[in-house]
Structures are given as C-alpha cells and as structure tokens.
Image (cartoon, rainbow, N blue to C red; front, side, top):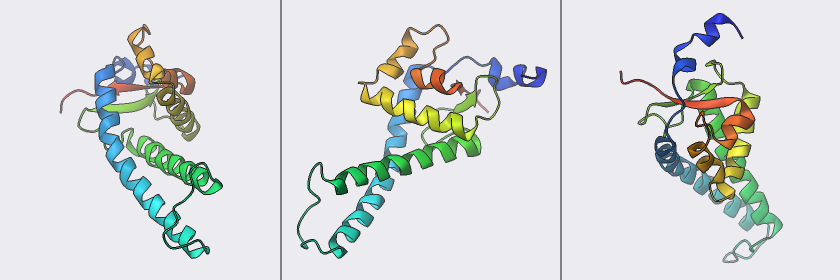
Length: 158
C-alpha cells in the first residue's frame, strides 16, 4: 500500500450502514429481474426450437432449468461486477451514494469483485447471514467484504 492509497477519501470513510446496503440491493433487484427475463426468453426460444412441444414448459430440476439458473447467475454477476469495476456503483447504489472500494480505498480488481459477488450469493442463500454479520462486526464488514478485501462506503452529499 502506498501513502496515497491510505490517505484517499474513500479509505477514510466508515463502512456503510446495513440499511443503505439492503435498500440498494432492493433497487438492484429490478435491473436483475429484467436481465433474468431476457435470459429466460432466450432459453424458451431455444427450448422450443430444439424440438420440444410448443406448450411444454422447462421441467423443474432438469438440465435446462439448472442451465437457466446458472446463466441468470452469471448475467447478474456481469451486471454487478462490471458496474462496480466501471464506477464502483450499481444502479441501486447510486441513490444511496454507496461505492465499492478495496480496503485501501482503491478501485477493486475483477478477481476481488467476482469473489465479492460469489460470497455475496452465499450470504443471501444463508438467509442473509452474511449481511447481518455487519451488525456485529467492529468495522461493519459483511462476509463478502471480508472474503474479497473490499468494502462499501457512503459518499458525502454533493
């Protein structure tokens, strides 16, 4: 770490409050939902063209459904990591003035961001325990913050 990285404004700000993070996650659900609908439409078109009956749905727990879930997860990850990499924010983080940075305040790497996304997924699947952890953590870091070496900071009002 350099002296400039340690003295950057983002490194000096406290980690954001859990409420702001959850609100931004709620906002980000809507762009993710739109992406899932797009991926789902592509899957239905390919499924229909591949010789399945016109009105037959993709069977639950079939290979098609698992592939659909995997594609939705990857597309959502691309949305999140590309947004974080480009400006440190997703669409849902902008109204709440939240930004993802590495622990030293610098722009996070792609590896850190994908690790953050993967562990964040596990945090949500574990009934949000990874997020609730921020309530007891001294630095207000979540599981995915700790695992990826990143954190979310709240920016000052312009």
